[in-house]
Image (cartoon, rainbow, N blue to C red; front, side, top):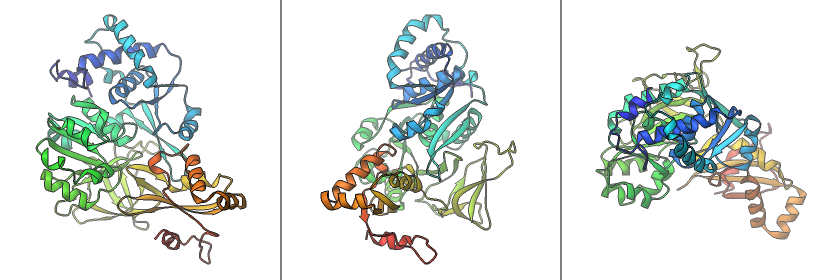
Length: 451
């Protein structure tokens, strides 16, 4: 994609970000690129909350031919796991460096110079990290070509719909959904991006004085769908996207009643990129429609969904290979499909991906835990629950100080590896985990402990 051409298609005075025109932002990228080329480190970890600064760091690193590593959060345990692959870090601590470089270097860098996107080789890659099914942080490598392919398809599907709107978001750009939808797609197509992450309805209302596209999550939409803002500002809420987990039908229906259109749900993963989309509050809205260039089929024995996609790295150089997902599905006669269940133990809590195996593995390392089992308890809000068998020392501590003391200690230990929203909220301490005659855990009996 020709970034400079796309950006200059906007009027020079129109903002790309809140206080940056396309020319201003390209100058920042150029200045930082010049600086980074002089640095010997090759593998750079990037973590930055502000989307404009994140975009500046990202494009400067790529233009300087550096390799970018994106951690999902600032949790100590996750950063330590990635550390061996990192030569240097960049983020909010370097914002003043951008200001200094832009001021000092602006006169030396031609504003109409090379297009930053053209300086990025299609083979260049970015590493995303996410929870793998084994419990360890899993590295997912995406090439610039893969990302560009997906952005082109997003624009073909919904470009006209989001034109002339402010792109605002309730999700992080450190994860693939926010990275693509709130940053790369609007940036490469020259749309106005709001820099801050929206956390509360009041913040959303402040931006709804103009036409808006909202990039959001099931958790945020479920919490706010009854708010009066949906009806009061319906004319300016042009399009709502949701991803990171299934959107409750009741939530989708309420929003559709106010906006006269259902939120667009996007199904996919870091590994696969986008796979399909749906709008629930419509006829056959529970069925998913695959993206334009994604082919789908169902593996006969396991019922797992398989895909061919230009957003995937070719397996063994074979671009026609099929990727088997961990989602079971049923194909409809019209070529759409219904999701059935997961075939692994990866769950989504408030759009955050969590490996229950990883949670159990970390907790089992605590000296007070002999065995444990993690599960999701569904309700108004899905919550993580833990059933645990304590060691002799753990039981003695529990008897002396109480269950709350044990709960707090376990949550503190897990907080080094997992974000707060993923920490267990329900705990049961039992003498033994229930198993059948083959030694397999009886999940229903564990679930019944929390009823």
